[in-house]
Length: 323
Image 1 (cartoon, rainbow, N blue to C red):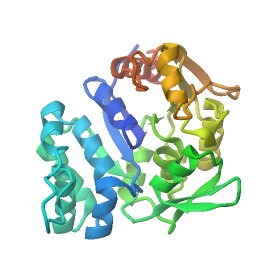
Image 2: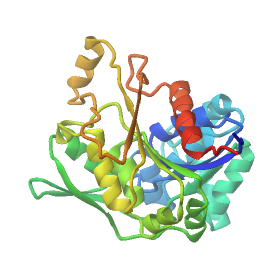
Image 3: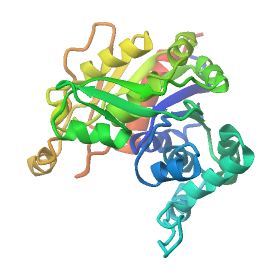
Image 4: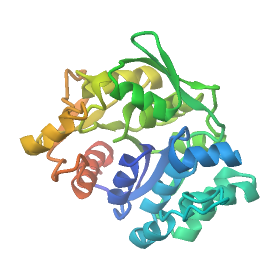
């Protein structure tokens, strides 16, 4: 067997992707890249997008922090929010969001701004925005109603509306440098993250599916632990696979799923929010199921080390070659 470094791309956003990156970054056999959704419309990111005309910085910032040399200290400083003062428009934003937004404004290039932040933080890996063009996630529900914006799409699912289709408005294209990077990955890892607002929007960007077709390695999906509201009742990992394959025109080769659940009290608490354990479902024959105990606490979050080791075991099995 010949060991070599793998160049992997991790696709997503929100809180799930940074957790995965933090677990993978210390593996000396991995060169880690984050490909991040850029369509956040809520919180500080949404406000900065509207007020300053910049791309939403929040998910990019969180991924850079996860890959930073001293993540705990960097998070303490850059995720602290400025005090809200009378007549102060920038109050309530995190220092990191403001820093990245200002770097974008003054450099005139978002990729340059991200590289500057990476250098400042000593990141062990690259962070790529899937697009540098501004757009919003839109959804049509089973009842025919339509919403626009990441926050609104999530709210529709929570209220019980089944997502029929989603799209980006206006349509946007992948940055050429990002397309080139994706084509050179040895493998792609998708998730975990909010399915319709963190994961699927990436694959709606023009050029992403073509870039993935240039990528010769496996596609690995990390299935979510829970569904995301009444609108996803009955949803399974197999449904995630089907929708991703339809959008990417590529087969999903491996799905990593949770196989052990916490106490009934914990599940009851999430059931009150209409969130249920996500089963594997009927996966297609070409898709390998890798199961393990990833939910180890009271909060619905993948155990970082368990997930990192499981991902490495899949990558090594799929990519290492005998000589």
